[in-house]
Image (cartoon, rainbow, N blue to C red):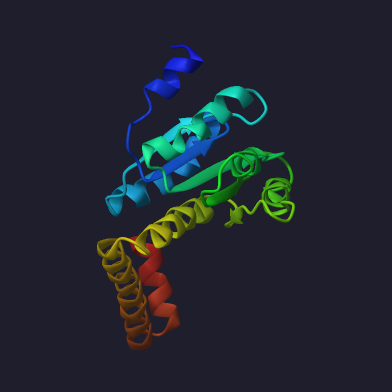
Length: 188
């Protein structure tokens, strides 16, 4: 498959584009794709590098308007220029997910993603899996501004999380700390 055919084979209409700098980023970024799927948000995932495929990345970003892309999630480790490079080519919201790839625990990627010059924002989330999930939820929140059904799904999602915490707290209060911890350890 040539570089050009990869762009042509991209899905025609999507709301969110997820771009990763390497296939090694996919296990973490699968959380973002799964979250978007859970909410029924049309999306796609592409592997494109700011350093190794800069022309293809620019061509891909140029396709966003005609394809209806509304939000971009970009994830990379180390130098992590991917989100910034995309943000420099579009006025769409870009959410950067720094990933851990080396001995610095992702701090290098975090700083490369968050330290953008004034005028070219990259909305940056946490390092790793929590960041991947929050990037998707952030994208959904942006889309929900004009899609009331997504807003309802987000409210239901938050209620489900709150209900889970309330159930766990009620059980903790009933059992006490020691029994609760033992029970949780026994059941994983």
